[in-house]
Length: 60
Image (cartoon, rainbow, N blue to C red; front, side, top):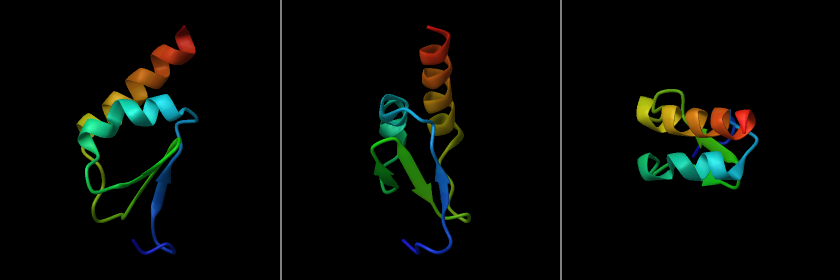
């Protein structure tokens, strides 16, 4: 991965990133962080899974 030209998604929750993991094969996934190239973004399903999990986590 080119480190100077990536996009990072930080949902502030390792568990939220884990919720999207089934859709993130081949992506740079670390604890609480998803990094990707602008020309190869994650799927809508991956983003939706992470954000839905995080929203539910915040809402309690």
